Image (cartoon, rainbow, N blue to C red; front, side):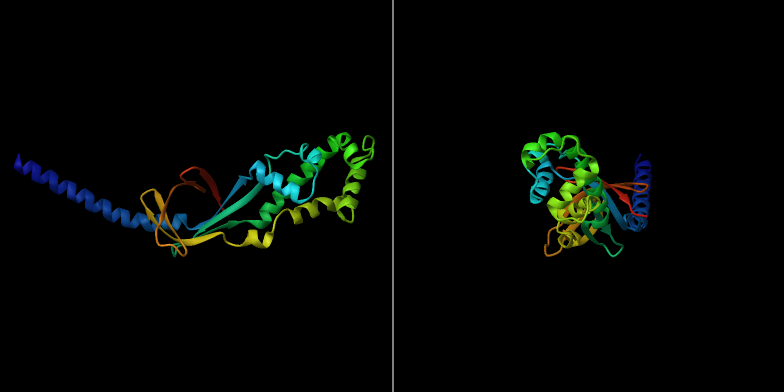
Length: 215
C-alpha cells in the first residue's frame, strides 16, 4: 500500500510539473493571442443620445420623432506583447455609424414633418424630401440639403477628445483574468476574458462586452 501511495504521489508530482511547464509555454501563446487591436460597437444611452440632439438645438417635437436607442459608437482596446494596453474610441468608424444614424433621423423627421408645422410656423405637408432637407440646410447654415448630414456628424462630438486614449496601463494574465493596472495606480483590477477565434469577451462586474479582432 505504501509503495502504491508513493507511486501515485510521484505520478501526481510529475503531472503537476508537466502542467506547470505547459502553463509557462501556453502563457506566451495566450499573450500572443491576446495581443491585437479589438473593436466593439456599443449603444449610447438614451440620455446621451438626447444630449447629442439637444446640443444641436433640436426641439422636443423633433426629438420625439427620433429613435434614441440606436445611436452607436465604436470602442477599441489594444493589448500589446509588452504587456501594456489602451482603451479608446475608433473615431472614423464612429463617424460612419453617426452618418447612418442622422440619415435615418432626417428620414424620421420627414415622415413626421406635419407635426413640425407649428414649431416652424410653416407648411411641410406637401414638400419633397429634397425641399425638406434644404430647409434644414438653411436653418443650420449648410450649403445644401445633401450636406446637412455631414454637418450633424461633424458637430455630434468633440472628436479630438474622443480620439484620445481614455485608459492606458499594464496587464498580466492570471488564469481566465486580465489583471489591469491603470497608469498612475498601484492596485490591479481583475477583468474576466475569453478568446474564441477572433472574438474577445471581456467580463466586467456589471457588464459583458464582445470585441472583434481587427484585421
